[in-house]
Image 1 (cartoon, rainbow, N blue to C red):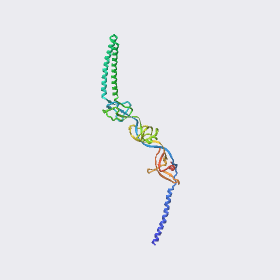
Image 2: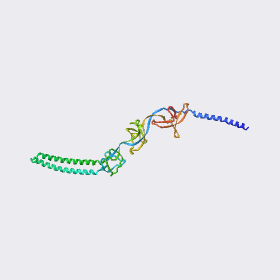
Image 3: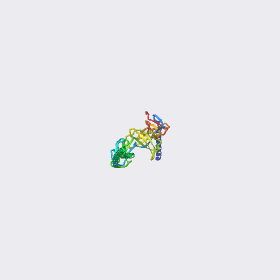
Image 4: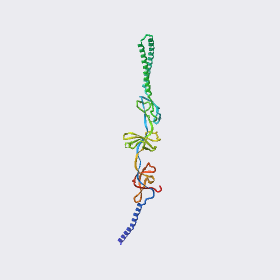
Length: 339
């Protein structure tokens, strides 16, 4: 009797479970086969978009002028420091070579001695000419006196020229700015001995630019007129690509309006236009964000719709974003109704 009751209970439980199972299956199918919502629809297709490449860059000037010593001596004064603005031709320091003073004095003494010889030769010429005119001296003696006077004058001119040359060399001790700009370095203290060709200061020359360091693989893709963007700076354009490769890098200059030149040499992150590429561009209204994840609604072949997570990136086209993954060309997207 107990066995019969247990069998009957099991049969009843089985009979009750069958309708419940059937009910759960039908609800899941209804959720999957949900009809697509109303709204605008687009079919994805690859379109041309600008290809940007991240590159390294720095704030620089078209050129840098080095202030070099032209004579050996002691740097007696340097009136500028880092950050100062200077004008082309402005005197910023002085180099003194004490030996030049001694040489100038020696040549001055030679010139004075030559002047005395000139006076003596002139007097001798005048006396010989008087005697020649009165028949005392022959013409050969007069010519000899004239040659002596001319030699004395030549010695004066030679001594004066040597003294002027020493003065010109001493004048090269004035240190002048070769260009107008900002002093980047002036690290030789006053009182230091210097030699010809020794850098005393470095000055910016030319307008301020952004200088790019491109991998040599981009050498054929970046050209004059390519756009460049950097955080905190206006959009610029490449104005020069240098025709050489150094350590696998190609250098390019970019003209950026209103650039700040207070920190020459500051490194910045930039991206440069390298041409066109194919991309999936979607109106931003077709993308929804939930909990930090972007979704698009994709229409299936059976008429149902599903929200698919996608990875997106900004696009140059106004009002559009680029879809990097999650959907493919040919998929149909459904936008929100009323947008």
